[in-house]
Each structure stands twice: as structure tokens, then as C-alpha cells.
Image (tube, rainbow, N blue to C red):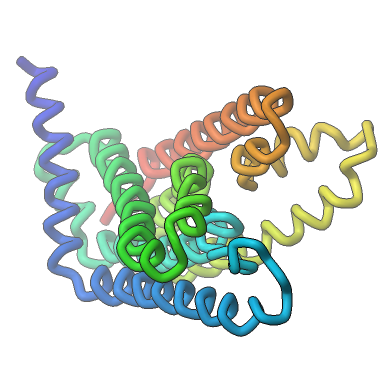
Length: 268
């Protein structure tokens, strides 16, 4: 009976977060801008195809790929919008004393923390779904079925790569309670870190002495699963397993750190 009560409380907290989200202007503004960006991305891709197809001879008449999924979903376009939304939404719970109310009304801190974490992953999944829906509804008619679906195949893998990223942003918000710190650290992670890791990996990929770096750090923060798909059937299982384990391990580490900081935090 007590276990059932804990489950009910857990989903009650998640429902409360969704209720608050749907009543917040930031949700509609941020995800509305994301939707607008996707439409612009599709439009510019179609325009580039039209302008360049007469210069370069391509059999199917298509020379540009919609880069939304293929290149930078986890640490680029969608990640940028998610870090802004999560920073605003999660930090507002401390500013409006929502967290203090939840704890004071009998909810355990662990329940509060993991309910909020589950909510953030649900929102991240919603972001991926929004990208897929718009690309399917607009991208396929404009760019063609083969053109768009080739990029959309990476959506699931991109969401998997988002696991540690979302955990980092949630940990920042719940451990610092500061909008400035969460944005100040989260935005450089989403914008700068992938490029830095890419450059380091480029110079160290043939060095056995730093193989641990590319195996543990770089793989954990980049979309190696889509790249593994293009590497061939013999290489894919190894790279996919390597990336998957890194995603899971880093996610578990960030979640543990965030939970520990929140439990010991003085909530006033």
C-alpha cells in the first residue's frame, strides 16, 4: 500500500510539472521559436537545392541535406533550445518556492528529484518528436521522402545522446538554483564543447596513448551511433555498444551527483 502511494505521489509531481509547463509562456515561446527554426531550416535547404542543382550535376537533383538530425541535434539546435527552457523552468521552481512547498507537504527529496528528472526527459523526447513531426509534415513534401527520412533516422540515436546532456543541465539547476550559472555553464557545453572535443579527437585518433580519451570522453558526448551506421555492418555493433555504455555511465554519474547535492541542500 505504501509502495503504491509512493508511485501515485511520483506521477502526481510529474503531472504538476506538466500543468505548470503548459501554463508558462516560456514553453510556447521557446518551442515556438524551435518550430520556426526547423521550418526555416527546411526552407533554406530547399532553396540551396534549387540554386545549386544547376551547378552540380546530381542524379536525384538533391545536393544538400537537412542538417537538423544529421549533424547537431544533441549538442546543437535542439540542445540549445532545451538548455534555455530547462534553465528557466527548473530554476523558477526555487525562485517561486515550489520546491520548498513540495518538500514541506510530505514529498521526499528523492521523489521530488527523480520526478523532475523524468519530466525533463519527457520534454526532451517531446522536442525530438516535434522535430520529427515538422520534418515529416513539411520536409517530406518540400524535400522529398528519401531526402528527409534519411536524416530523421538519426532522431532516436540523437535522443539517446541527449541522456547525459539533460542530466547535466538538470544537475546544474538543482544543485546551484541559479539561472545564471545553469545558462552560463549549459550554453558553452552545448555550443563550444563539441567543437573542442572534435578538434582534440582529430589530433589524437591515431595515438594509442590517448585512446582512453576518445573512447570515454569524446564518444560519450558525440553522436557516434549515427556515424557507426555509416561505417559498415562490421564496425557498427562495436561502436554502438561503446557509445551506448558511455551514454549510460555518464548519465548515471550526473544523476547521482545532482541527487546527492539536492538531498544535502538547504531549502528555504
